Image (cartoon, rainbow, N blue to C red; front, side, top):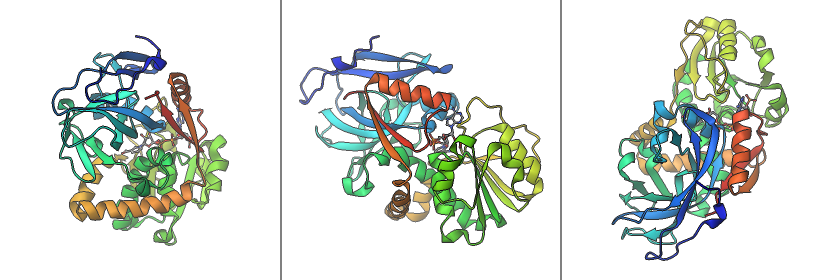
Length: 376
Ligand SMILES: NC(=O)c1ccc[n+]([C@@H]2O[C@H](COP(=O)([O-])OP(=O)(O)OC[C@H]3O[C@@H](n4cnc5c(N)ncnc54)[C@H](OP(=O)(O)O)[C@@H]3O)[C@@H](O)[C@H]2O)c1
């Protein structure tokens, strides 16, 4: 192993020697521990391509991947080759630097799931005008939404740096919003977001603050230090800090949890009990907090997993109509979000480690969108 990121060699020709791959790896059993691994990229087999990972976004979502790595298969996308160490997926941009696949050429750019690494090998199948699917053996059993790579079209995303930092999180919240709206909010008069400063939480608040909410109240609950940031987005009728959560108004409510903080979830359930019409668990940003007790008053929190809903949305709307609707909703969110978030770029292993450590410790400024690169 070495930390020589600068030793990276780029291959622009299909017959050039293999590049070295530098990868950020975390210890699966203790994801606060990480290292940089470096090895020659394997020679390509027929049908494979080598892609340089240009840049990727890092948010608390990627830390949650480590937490759920075994349960939801996140370690299986980009295996490190060593069972105790894992490569966390992130969303980012790629450029083809070698190709032994007739349908994909050197120089083409794609967007999708990437390892936090300099390079990655894929085996494209179903190559179309807009997408291909990575059919690399290990991925066959994983979610197709995460195995799909989009040809990057600058016009589609609006802001190339904000896209990987916000679009996947937006997608979750837009799908959840759609689900709530379609069900008439389950009769709720109030929607309470726990972990309201998260990007995923703010995306949901953006859609809830639109006209579709009618007279329903949207309440954001966050840590005291992030309260002002949440308030200034203007998406919430009320913003509470975690220690004020007992003050939520006694109304029929949907509770949406991005924090995974059992104590906070427990207090909301204790306060509202049978008034809770739906309790959803989306995230777990407070990864080291105790989980909620099993015998909570009110309905049992149910996990909402976005990739399953993408497939459902495509099945209901048809692929093109689903993507058109998603693109329109994205642009509406982006117009608001670009006034809330500032892109912070970092290059190299030290910059990546610094942001990763801050996310694990929970000290990242919620107004930052971190875009990183390992030097491809
Ligand atoms: N189920 C799904 O399909 C799905 C899809 C997308 C995202 N998610 C989940 O949604 C959650 C939010 O993800 P994100 O990327 O939007 O997060 P983010 O923007 O990076 O969230 C930042 C916020 O999370 C809290 N936080 C982060 N790390 C923390 C730590 N170590 N200790 C305590 N608080 C911490 C803080 O919020 P507060 O001060 O407000 O507590 C912080 O302002 C993640 O758990 C992610 O996995 C789930």
